[in-house]
Image 1 (tube, one colour):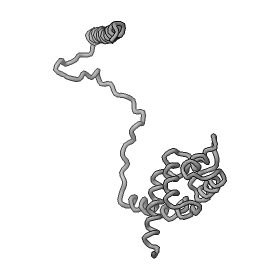
Image 2 (cartoon, helix red, strand yellow):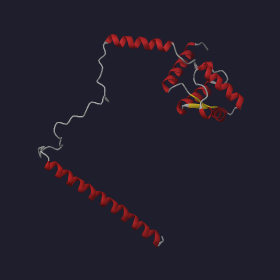
Image 3 (cartoon, rainbow, N blue to C red):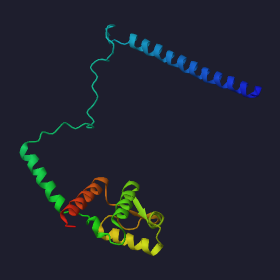
Image 4 (cartoon, helix red, strand yellow):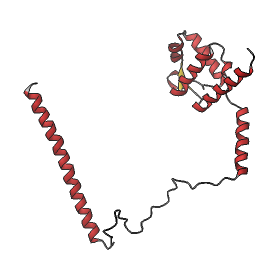
Length: 182
């Protein structure tokens, strides 16, 4: 090792140590000043307390944490009925509606879009090794199924499907496969 590297290392350690010592002294000075202010004030403290509270200071209610709402069993039944109605009326077509590519490719392409938040023609071409026109046909099918929206900036199509919707689509596909005879 060269002597210059050793000197630079020692200087670096000195700078780090000096900075740590300076931070300690500044913190010590701030603590002493705070103690003086507390001693001069008319608030009395018990030395036995581990935590010192300054009087009866209450923070104003900023509404960040809402109080818990109480639900009854009737409310729960109403909620479950509305969920059943929503399941039958889905905004997305089933995965079988994509006919240009296989089911596995549809699933993986949709999962890619869900994780990225968008899909583009270039992504489809890179993933499926297809040409530009075939990728545009796939995009139009995905739009018809409701999976992606209209073209946004940078030739990207935002994906409307969230992860929980993606899981529901997979579950309905599995149910349909079980009920169809082979």
